[in-house]
Structures are given as C-alpha cells and as structure tokens.
Length: 242
Image 1 (cartoon, rainbow, N blue to C red):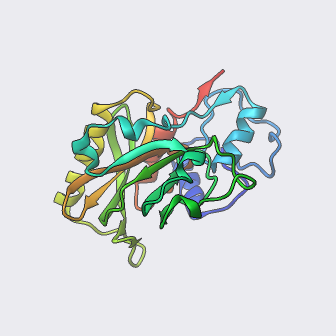
Image 2: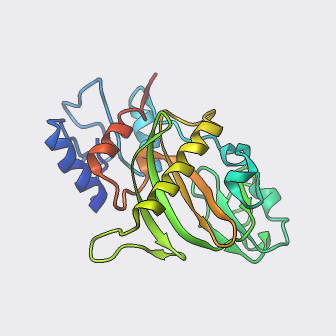
C-alpha cells in the first residue's frame, strides 16, 4: 500500500513490488480503496497517513520506543542523550540538539536553548523529546534491519550535506561495513522496544568514532541508496494485525 503522495522512493518500491509479483495499491485519497486485500498488507507512507490507515483497518504500524536511544551502552552513543518532555526541554539553557521523539511536533535541529522550541499553544508540553549534546557527524548512514540484521543500507549525509552525487550514494566498503556493524551491535545491545523490521541510522562522530544516531519506523523512512527489494522484505515485518 502506498499513500496518494507521489515520491521517488514510493515509485522505486512500486517497481520493486511489481518485480516480485506483489499487488501494488496506491490510495487515491484517505479512504480505503475498493478491492483492497484483507491480509498480507504492507505499507510505505508518512506517519500521519499510517495513523489514518490504522484508524480504518485493523492494523498497527509500531514505532521504535521513544527512549530506545537512551538505553544503549554509552560506547554506542559517544555523546550525552537525554529523554524528556517538550515542557522540560523548554527549560534547557544549553545549546543542544532537540528532536521530537515520535510525532514531528517541531523541526529537529540544533537550538541555542530550549526557549527557541515551540510554545505551549503550538505544541503539547507532554510530547516526548530527545535532547543530545551537539556533535559533528562526518558521515551518516541508514540501515533497514530485519531481526537484527542489516539487509540493505546507504550513506546519506556527509558533514550535514547530502552524500548523493549524480544519482549515486558513494562510500568505501570498509566504511560501509563499520557503519553496518554499529547498527547490528545496537540492535543486539537493546532490541527491546524495536519492531522486527526497523531502520537504524549510524554515523561517525568527529573525534569520537562510530555511533548510533537514532531508530525510525521502516515504513516511513527514506531509502536513499538502499536496495528496494530488500527494503520490501523489511516492510513485510512492520505491520501488526489487531
């Protein structure tokens, strides 16, 4: 199942699904399409659309636990990371990286202090937020994980800028292997709170080494240079029937 929103990633997955003889259904709007199969449903869509699908169909699309990152061993983080609420984050006076842990209530990024975050009338103070020490990421990678193994992945940023060049996402074999190993170590270190199919992002922190960036739901994550058929294998494990 694909949302009405056309994007390059959904088109790539549509073609890959066709190569596997899967039936591809792109919703025309936010209503259940006629003739939609009742079983073996796989979704790729943004969070708001996934939430709508869960309201209309007896299916849930689990997300990683809000506090998963804070449960990892310090050697996998190499920076201070704290789970809090938006209300508490507003009181932080240090320059930090702020990211909404689940719903995208504000734009993730570096803020001079929590006072720059959205005020109460614009975002609920109970919303979970991750606050981390500001670091320099030399590289950032994305891996689509199935039961702890990275089936496919790709570099996507270098020093905060897109790593794409002429439609390719180049990186060395050794660099890719180290990034992948970090993702698999993270899953092995703490699989609690992670769906069987999930995305784990890793990267290299300047002066500190390979580290985990975050975990995200595979059904809503960008592919970058990941191999589409392998992504579909992960997406098969991201829906839970009620």
